[in-house]
Image (cartoon, rainbow, N blue to C red; front, side):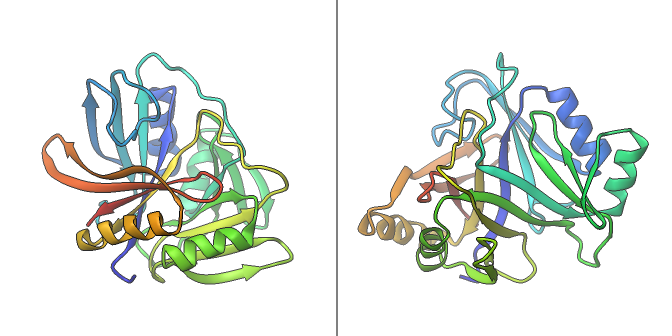
Length: 258
């Protein structure tokens, strides 16, 4: 599974101007590419909407070796109800903390040297007031799960992720495909995971030859396949194959050839 890599998280955004200001001026990310579409994505990248939409990829560096954010904007939709499914992205950047202070963007210190802030729309980010030697400051994405044991079976046994840390008492686990990649943190919550309307999607790259096998595995294990293997056209880029899955709590997972 070493060839698999965490790529990006998809956010639905209602205010493009404020959102761009947050990612660019507070976090310090750059716009990597922007695309406009006349109709909904056949893999529902923009959610269950058929109309005109746009996609903006933002990150600290190229998509090839950085975990980035995909900001999807559906024309005419100004906000989305938040659930409890997405619990935050953690990044290490003293520059982001400094930028937030300068711009008077609200920060709350939740642990020593760790500040909670919100992107427009209410998505939580945790900023560690330090800078690490690696080129990508994005450390982990945290998602809520209703049954940690069941989720670990899915993400590790079926999707091949490695457990880096596990704390039964705090009901959390840190998973990843490789040491130098953004990690996925699963955090147990009481009750059901509610995705509401703002639900996102996490994406991973996967060698093309493994995609049909992955889809077959999910069929055999009676797991949810939201979009069977499909080819997606991207303006100015090569057509790519993707398969969209859902974990036991309904978190959307995109595996894209790469």
